[in-house]
Amino acid sequence: MNFKNKVIIITGASSGIGKACADEFAKCGANLILGARQFVTLCEIAADLEKRYQIKAIAVQVDVSKEEDCALLVKQAIDTFGHIDILLNNAGLSMRALFNDTDISVLKNLMDVNFWGTVYCTKYALPEILKTKGSIIGVSSIAGYRGLPGRTGYSASKFAMNGFMESLRTELLKTGVHVMVACPGFTTSNIRVAALAQDGALHGETSMEEGKMMTAEAVAEIIAEGIVNRKRTLLITGQGKLTVWLNKLLPALADKLVFNHFSKEKNALIK
Image 1: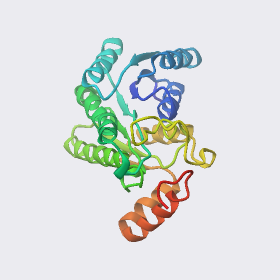
Image 2: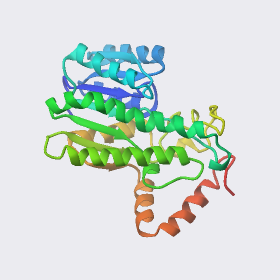
Image 3: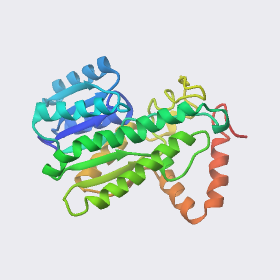
Image 4: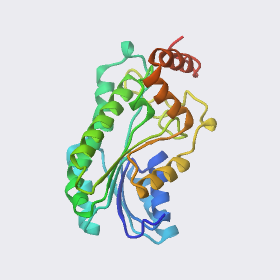
């Protein structure tokens, strides 16, 4: 895969899938604008990528829930490189709490980051991507196709992202712009450790066996290949594909299977 001299914005680039994508794109020759709230970590990642791959990487502190931060992120990309080829909307939060016990502010926070962050970044980057006939990517989730217990806000935000991206794709059908939704299944990352509890605090630990999941690096390779081949949707992992199809064909059975799966997680919320 050759991304040489392509300019790629990645949000949520300080860890997990975002960090892995930064490494994958840099390895393939891309110049990067890395956005995240963890600025020191982001600077270290950018410096490391520049040293290892002889590309240019810019770290920008950004909270994607703030429209002005997203506008500045895109402006930094244009000011530095003069154009934008690819926007990877990856920044995201998760949660783990039953809806009945959860403060509404938790769901609002998830929607602000996962949905509105995608909307803001896309709004400001789109005029430039129209010029390059580039790509807009949304890193969604299987939870954007199938609601998951204990993740009402997360699933809702990813459903919203999927609808937004599908509508946008249709609007841009004859412009040459590529719009792709990437939906990983369970992936090894810190998203469950950083998941919000019912009061908005961080859980601080995972509720699942991380070692049995797909790695973030493997997901990054699939996303990069999907961009090269200008794919429409990526349903990543066999379990994820099966979940989506079961939910379409046998939704009542999917309810039972999803319930059973989550009733076996560590400190299960449903029993």
